[in-house]
Image (cartoon, rainbow, N blue to C red; front, side, top):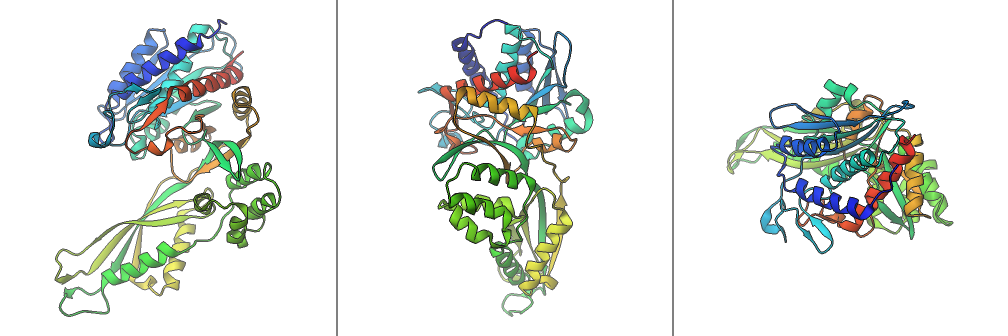
Length: 451
């Protein structure tokens, strides 16, 4: 195997990311196919075969496979990322969001972090593996998806349902982890093994309509307001999932007493979770995230009622963003919501209509791929433990886990990276961060796929 010329590899990664950022793949409408075709052209120059599968015109997902030249000793590794991005208002940006500007040691553009930077890194790994002659014991698959930002139905979900045999593997890497977090002065790398399921619902309040000049006690808007207030201030029951337990135990292992005992008490004595949270950390933001990792959450977000100011509407509606934990169901969270409404004396005035997605599964906390991730981090960032984590939001990872394929959210990012710009103005990633991610990803591939 040839040695890697890292300076050249990083320069190529920056150039490829800059090019990829110039494709406007704002979703909606997405239009990911042109970006996918460009990746296919880059791969074709190295004789790496690929194909683009469209769920609809313009909604293309690229799948490429670098095959092991010798005896195969394992199922493939999947490197997955999405090509679509959220909207960007150019007036809010220092440099145009689809310019791919390289300025001050950073690459700017919508998607630099979420997640064209990851896709470009995975592409570089494929190119390096081919050019260096890395002897492979398993294939490497690159999947660049459409449509993650609006739920994945036109991208990863469609691919998994219709072409799963093209991406099936021993495991995969994608977004959702790789952050370097600090808890009580101790740093940790995270890898995502679990995420909450979206279980949205609509609350509809019914009442008596009429002229607003004659008030009524049966006002649908007032009923809905009471329901929103009750649900918005409720603390739903605690549920300790295996992923949350693994995260807590991973954190606790490196905490001094009495912090260590407080962290372990979160999973050993969940009935007193608030007391243990106060003792576990002084960070209010971390406490909020931990609460969301221990409970189903229901957040009212959108309201609709009435047509004229002088008319009392007969109904009023609220959309609720509900996220449920692994192992929970629509029925179990519905029971929790109804209990809150009943306690507020409003249950008989409210109807619930659910918009349910398939219940998500978790990836195993330990595996050969996790071992490779852990070893790669030791090579480049020794002394910082790698711990499993769960996401309170969603990613495309759910669609592969649904078919029992282990996939981990892991793209290592250096501290200080402009993570606050994800989905915000002036999104960018540092060249040093790209170099670090590429070297860690390369070592993972060598350890997991190398013969």
